[in-house]
Length: 251
Image (cartoon, rainbow, N blue to C red; front, top):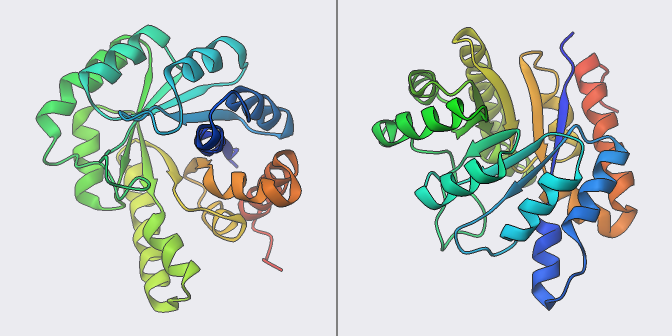
């Protein structure tokens, strides 16, 4: 069975740091702890408004971690220049609005197709693995394949929110949409990742899809770290994912 990787997003360690100013808590230290605890890679989103991760954080992560660095970014010329300079292992292109609290839905790969094709081509030619953060729909998957991105990351936020608020019927519809999208993306020859809003329960459930090879999780882990510590939160997430992938029944 294909191993399931865990990418730990450290954005909100930087959010806490920036709330007070100064150097603490240090996102690089969080990344190193995450790797020690079992993370397969580190994800960080350098937003246009620099609300959490800063340029210096990206440079420090690239210089000091020994696992793949996944650079989440908007498809802008400024971010392209930064990515080509830093040369992370991977770039995940995401939608971005200044007024949003967090990423709200998938990238518009249909409307943005003609802009994204040359953008993705430059990253591909630089040897940077490109993923597109998309809605779990057949149209978005087909557009992603035509853009020549080798990876899609399916937005799990709608499903996770429905689970959180107890809307069982909606949650099952959203889960079915994800299940169909996972199968369609794999059939198109795309590598399939997933993320946004995942916790122990939802990560365990989506881990059962053998075509999904990576989950990217951040906010929940940083929140859990307040109570159990970051290393323990990551170990528990790794255990939940491994149990889901192995088909173990939920307790």
